[in-house]
Image: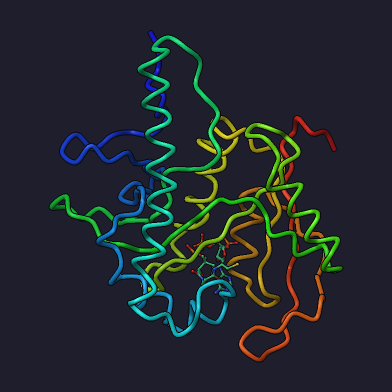
Length: 246
Ligand SMILES: CC(C)(COP(=O)(O)OP(=O)(O)OC[C@H]1O[C@@H](n2cnc3c(N)ncnc32)[C@H](O)[C@@H]1OP(=O)(O)O)[C@@H](O)C(=O)NCCC(=O)NCCS
């Protein structure tokens, strides 16, 4: 019998929201698509110094007014993938599982005993920003090439970006989330074969999360980057699927 095209996502029978559950002992944690109602939870987590100090991307301080545009963007990306897969299932019910260009679940939530859930953080998988290419024109061209490769091309370079509420740090949640997305979705459903990881030097937690998911630390990148007025060097890590060889 044919799998649902959403496989291995499960679907909440009440809300019809797809989700991916982390393995025990973190099986009370699920990954879901973003919800527009998540907006008020982002600022308090991102602005916590235990989180903000390690982030480059979002503007800090993160104001509540930034959240709606961001959530519309990433919810739109999730919705489009889910719609594409449902359409494939309708057109081709016995067909093979379709490769897609992203992961529709990324918001990390703790499911409480009464069935409600609380927002804990985010893990996104995207085409890499290629921090290892320093020369601006060379990087612009490399990004253009990487971003224009067709879905399923094994030479696409991908990366993860993530953060978690400090109340839930050091319980193995992000390691489980990264490994689950990589093995249950990115490899089989996106054709991901090569990834890079970037963290500020000194971000031991994030470096370890990458390493525990199979990434290998390669070197420190010193491109002269300045973030919020401070010089930053980066840890650069790589992950390769065994298909690509040594
Ligand atoms: C980095 C982050 C996502 C880690 O999430 P987490 O769920 O706490 O990580 P885990 O519990 O899976 O820990 C994985 C490993 O890192 C270690 N670790 C976690 N936080 C650490 C810290 N602050 N210092 C040193 N080691 C740390 C854990 O001990 C574990 O290693 P071990 O199994 O060898 O003991 C979380 O600390 C965070 O949100 N940090 C702020 C944002 C951030 O850095 N994002 C990534 C930007 S590149």
